[in-house]
Length: 305
Figure 1 (cartoon, one colour):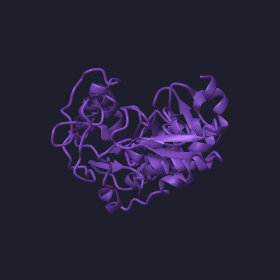
Figure 2 (cartoon, rainbow, N blue to C red; figure 1 turned 30 degrees about the vertical axis):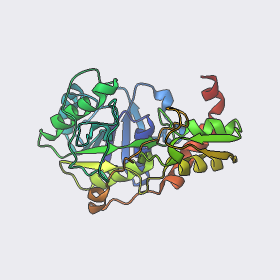
Figure 3 (tube, rainbow, N blue to C red; figure 1 turned 180 degrees about the horizontal axis):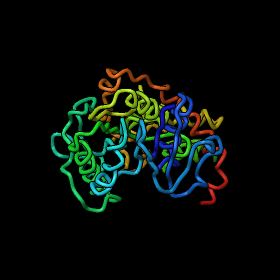
């Protein structure tokens, strides 16, 4: 039986990867800071606070690598793994003017972003800041890829899925559950910021596990719905309908904002992943349902928080 070790396996991406690998017949061990976050259906997977490799693993997945120092700590483990996957972010990409998704001036990409798009320079400022997140991810990527080991870097976009630390769909779902009669959408809801389902990320992890190599791959859903479409999908899941107020571009700044409000759109090109044999688990409307059910079930605690 093939063995996988997932670092940070109790988060949204980690638990989706664990479920996919267990379904595929893998033995899965996970590490995390809080064993209480392990879903009941994954209780059979091993849990430890410190990674235990023994003679090595077939697949090593790191969901908690944010800096060059984190990457340096990962390398000794990666040397005992047949294939390693590190989760990065589309936040590393810059447009022709050097703007990125966390910069003051929004980026303007010419079309779907490939893995050859330029990235921000590597840096070591605090990684949990808008200015430092992308540069630290680039530094981590470079540290791993320069090692010569078979390490795949995945760059997801707006992550959604059951157990997500920052469930963006709550923006619309909270309004729908409160039965708000009107939803306001900036720029007529045309904004697009490519979503990435955790189950689709997991499907890509499963693909590269069988094809070890040093590479960078985008990791996003097969479709990129705009804010208007997402608002309708979320409202339908809550059994609600509302009047859509589609605001023109000259509306006051911030009015009708939503997490996918990007014009021009941000869309990741998935050609490289498909060339490896990757097949997504489903489109956005299909894959987001698990997260929406989870959010509805946990609504009392979420509202109290």
